[in-house]
Length: 221
Image (cartoon, rainbow, N blue to C red):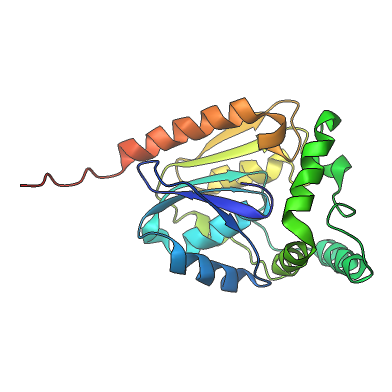
């Protein structure tokens, strides 16, 4: 459920899977995920994982049972973002590590979690980070498709997030019919790292809402 991944669950809450984002193109990444996902699934994504979750909901709306978007951005890339990603790729080509490129001051409000964020960078590694930077450059504007989301939806934001500020999440919540917005006080971009108990509780509520929303299977005779 980290910045480079999205989490998928069956609609009843079983079979949680953490997906690694390792393709350099958004639509290619979505194609790869749709090949391995079950017929019906719920999506929870953080940061880039949220962007991929929105793309999955756009491409396969009939298969999505629920959508939870955290610390993310539904808009298209800006010129400044493209420049930043290209600069990061150049640093990787020059020998920098994923840990070297982890922008702790942008990711965390509570810097006591620096070690956890650095471990996340180590787990991602240079190859996957390069793919994710390239994937970012292929993003599209997901906002027009959000009105078509017709499943339980939650939007989580940290009020100290310097990468994806609250107003971006307010916009998403206004575009998704029935979406519930939760703003976590004193929390930066990495919500599950800085507020794990709150995020877990909200995900549990969302899971229960999905269970109530999904049609019950017909009884077997």
